[in-house]
Length: 172
Image (cartoon, rainbow, N blue to C red):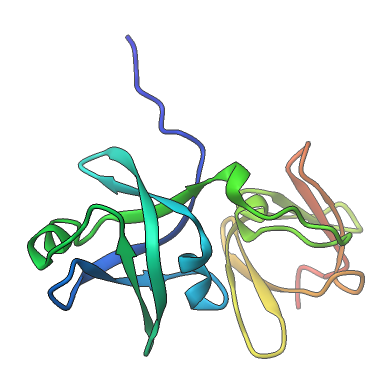
């Protein structure tokens, strides 16, 4: 049985609907800051299980959302057809990270988390952005919230073995 595999993509947000009459899209962006989604030359949009590449003509922040103008999306009707589409980029479009301890969130999701005593917390489900620092949401039989503070709490990350070691106790 043959299955069609999805290309490796990094999801950045989704289309909320049309904006204006000229084919602009109102999008929800998971990038930080939100308007960074408009900085890419091209975006992948997924509808009905199919990814399609679109060139970005323009974009800017608009309140809590971002508005984007894509090449070839020239009127409100075309924009409305894209409502609900997932927005992503190819992995190689991400800027290279230079500092030790810097990782894209997408790289951390799915890692097994252990403390220095060898106790396993479970697997990173997602991360939360807070005012003070980001927080790892780790799930197994229960949920653990572990601050992502490099060097103090997060001691080591090994993407090859999909593991993270933290200086954190099970009963915190």
